Length: 250
Image (cartoon, rainbow, N blue to C red; front, side, top):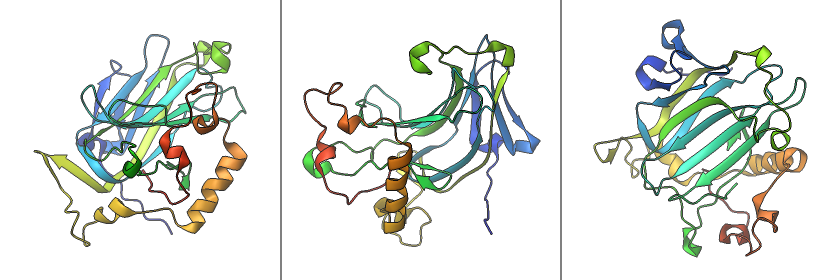
């Protein structure tokens, strides 16, 4: 039995762009984003978060979704921002989606989380060797649906089939109860309190079972890893690529 604690999209999120293409329905229990040839759409959270676990159920564009990108990410403000990305790249009917992940720390990316309860990658907290870690800048949750057929499929060779438009993404069952809300320069979580719902996440690691599932996903489904891309990074691997298996989850 799985218990889902659903938030209310009216209370937790704002539609930020798309001129009517983003909608909150069912008394705040459902949020939809739509893409047509004129524009996509997007939303952002009202709250900022510093640490914690955040859940959202997302139904991606079904059928022929080639050329579309559904982004779900957290981002802080300013020019030296922190950002945690999921990008779901649509595909032709019957073919699986491609998932891009990336982490930016103080504006620096090139570091390629959990989907359906399965870990996809880890970003290790290895500040001890000089790798910046996104721990100080509170971030809002963002999501958007947009057209990227100039690059998203086979370098832009496969274009969006606009006869299938409008394309729609649906979101429900947002749960941020185990996340630390940042407001007025302070957090809703007391990191020293073990009773706090999110405080344990400050030091959580993948257990052996999750490590095995992560390795299985990477072995069977990973098609690109920046850590092995010597052509893109001829200067050598990033420092975090040299550490051992003990990791901290983002």
